[in-house]
Length: 375
Ligand code: COA
Image 1 (tube, rainbow, N blue to C red):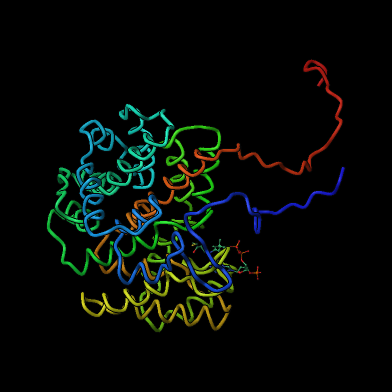
Image 2 (spheres, rainbow, N blue to C red):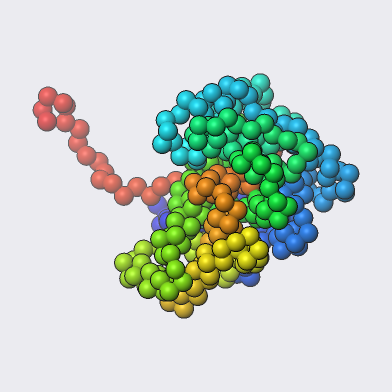
């Protein structure tokens, strides 16, 4: 047999075509449907990015408001879903709760097993609309509080913060969260998106694919890194401690969370936006210390290893400044990525081929079977 080349971690393997997002790892650029993420983040909103991703066009003002209103009207979640969230053990992680809630939501969705383009679009809209409500409701019930009903007049980000705190956020807070969701929206064939596409390629349904995507995102080498990055900054605790802390961690061969990337060979373009937001927010909303510690960690990593930070690093300080509980950082990544995952499932279903790679067998061969009584 011809010699097989094994790409461990599928590094460098092109496993699919997509017209959704393009990650230019060499130049450190990211495009949604051909539009530079920096232009979208400067001018646009999550809803606009989502419209672009799903419909392959920038919306007019009226198209955008109709699209946004349509999503906002579907934000409410069923009482049964809240009951399920309430019934989970107290130490359930929010990512675990979200995974369970999306899987359970399928049972209440009459179109759950319908993979037609129309049903997929309707289910995708329902999922994107409901995820922030589920996250906020889970947080409230675990705190012994009642969930707050959504307010469709607000943007998704503003309404999430309101449902979390039972108080309307400031505009600057809602805008920062909205931009982070836009930056998380789509990122090519990352591990969670690939998981969604593998599941969709068996002609399984959207909810099943998304449940798998959430499970993949949960890990600390992927979406879990934003929470871990903030835990690290809290442990470092002061600007003076940043350099020795990083040196000791690197000396112990530890990975520094929020740094490095499989595809980018230069700075993650999303980190550029989030660093600026983190600086602005930390000086306008309160404690600049965490941003300063982050800066020192970043400088040390560049000096010692030449490794740039990724999207999750400054997202951590942005979310911390917004007062979001640490273990909701990764669920918010999921809320943003939901639009991208759904886009990829729809793309996969529209032009499907079962994804089924092979493994190089390295085990023993041709062993003689011994009947059980003779072993
Ligand atoms: N901290 C310290 N060293 C790192 C590092 C990090 N965060 N990321 C990469 N490196 C080093 C590795 O130790 C390795 O060095 P070596 O060649 O001397 O052994 C080299 O850079 C290559 O790293 P590797 O883990 O093989 O790269 P990868 O493509 O498999 O990993 C990540 C990509 C994202 C998994 C990796 O950078 C990582 O674990 N980062 C931390 C988690 C994180 O922030 N994830 C979110 C990604 S958006």
